[in-house]
Amino acid sequence: MILYSELPAGRTRQVASDLLMLVWTVVWIRIGAALDNTVMGLAAPGREIADAGTSLENNLRAAGDKVSNIPLVGDDVRSPFDRAGGAGAALRGAGEAQANAVDLLATFLGVTIAAIPIVLLLGLWLPRRVRFVRRATAARRLVRSDAGMDLFAFRALTRRPMAQLLRVHDDPAGAWRDGDPAAVRTLAELELAATGLKLPRAW
Image (cartoon, rainbow, N blue to C red; front, side):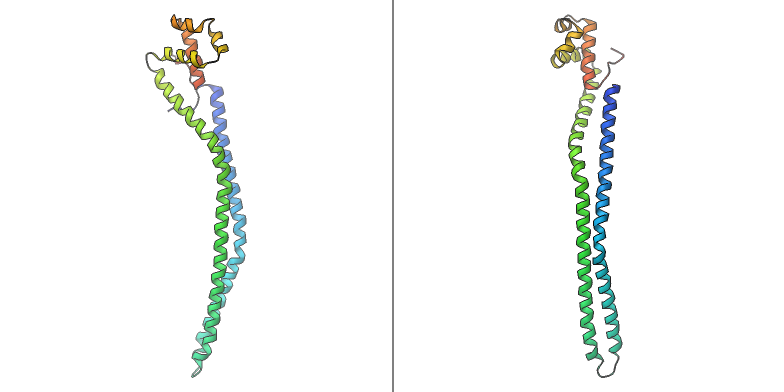
């Protein structure tokens, strides 16, 4: 598998784009995490309400347990404490619900704010990298074949700009048909360079 161009300029551009993608991803993950932490701070009042409700419930139920030991009237006196303790439980539930809602919102906002720009750049970067890897890997296999040089020279005739072809030979197609070694080699080199590969030393 060919991951990077064998040509210095092409390899430099690819490494730079990979680093840009990495830095972009890290920056937006950190921004998302910072937003998550900021929004999570809004859950503090809900947690305080939940703690207050828990404390109120426990204290009232403990008081109810104590007054229930009063002879004859203990059970009647305990009922208001139990009802008030139930109100404390409801307060705790409301506080927990508020804190949980803020937690969910913080997670959603953090993930969304990070994911959108990452996915957008990934949509531009990844297809190009995949295309290069597939094209260069296939070209490397063809280079090793017996007819590799001739094949790449022919592809150059059909794919390279006219100005490039004329710099190779005044009649590049005729030189290819005649099997001119220098022209065929230069044409193959042009096509390989466009793919990101160097001309093999064995050629």
